[in-house]
Length: 149
Image (cartoon, rainbow, N blue to C red; front, top):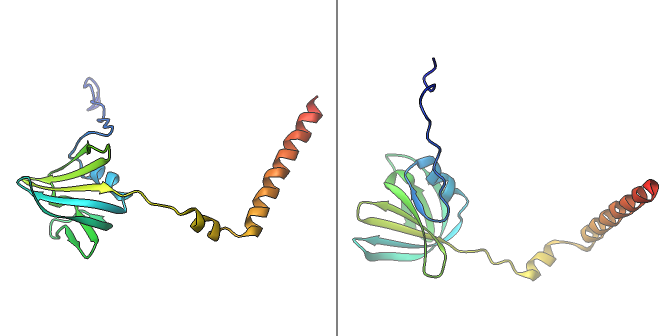
C-alpha cells in the first residue's frame, strides 16, 4: 500500500480575482509578469508612500530587503506573510502584499500602445509579404475546394 492510497488528496485551490495566497511560488507567479505599477505603502492603515514604478526583480531571500526607490521596485516575497487579491472601487485588480500591519498594494498600469508607433515599426515590404502569404493560402484553399467538387 502506497503512502497516498486510502488518503483523499485535497485539490489545489482555485483563486479567481479575489483571495489570499500564502504559497511563495504562487505569489511569484502572479507578480512576475507585472511591469509598470501604481503602489501604495501603508502602515496601520496610514499611507506612508505612494507613486508609480517599474518592477525590476521579484526574488525570495531572507537576507535582502524589498526596495522601492527612484521609480524602481525590487520585491522580496519573504518580506511579506501573504498576498491578498482584491478589486478596487474602479474594478482594478489590487495585489496587496501584507506583513503584520504593513501593506504594499500594487495596481498594474496598462500599457498604452500608440497606433502611430505600431505603424512605424512595420515596413511596407513586411506588410506586402504578409498579404501575399494570406492571399496565397486563401487561393490554395479555394483550389482544394474545387478539386473536391
